[in-house]
Length: 286
Image 1 (cartoon, rainbow, N blue to C red):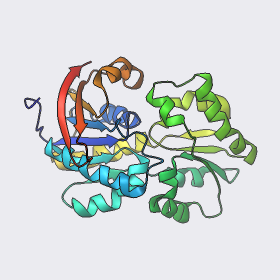
Image 2: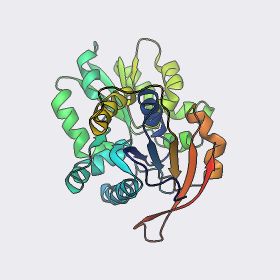
Image 3: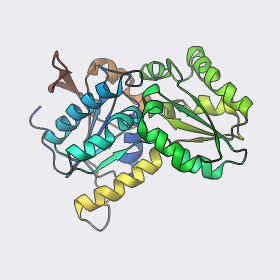
Image 4: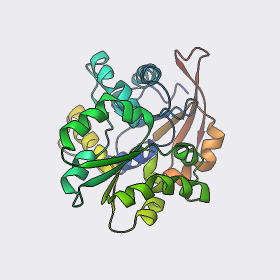
């Protein structure tokens, strides 16, 4: 295990589970040469229903963990963790650049024709100051219809993207939005891009589904370039991608191909009984 870490000039990414792999996928496509360490906290998934203080505590510990493994910038690839922790993390780790997730309300509000925008996110995101700030700044005069999609994160964690149960969850959330006249639907959880085909089938071709992951990848590339102090990215170089889970690597190994199309090194980590620190345990490769 110690032969892998610490890495040099790595990008650290974390999420409550596999949702952040939608962001990892875009970042890896944009910056193929960068060492990446992804941590998915599957032991605690989902973050959405948890208190903001609890998510903040997890986020602090995960950030320490990733920095110790060699991360020199952190992407908080979780809307709930961004809502709960991003401001505090920037204060506590002033030398580390952080990129967080916020629902892409701004582009939706700017481009809506009907004046009505749907937002799918978890309770923690909707309760956070970040979301409130985004709505206040960018959604003036726009009707926002929102839903927490109970149970959807758990379906996606199982790589269940299009079963009847998953589609029914989406229909329950989206049909009232359609009836309200939305022409944009914002994905406010990094798990949700994996069900974009199902969402698009429900809302139809006239409703645009907005995934923030490509914009996050571009922002990450810009900041990583500054860290590297290189004038350009060498797209010919490729480095390993490490995915660390606090769940079971053998279970994740069976499903990983549903989420990302490239090979990774899978590593397991354990929380102590008090949820106060993380330890690496063993690894697989897939």
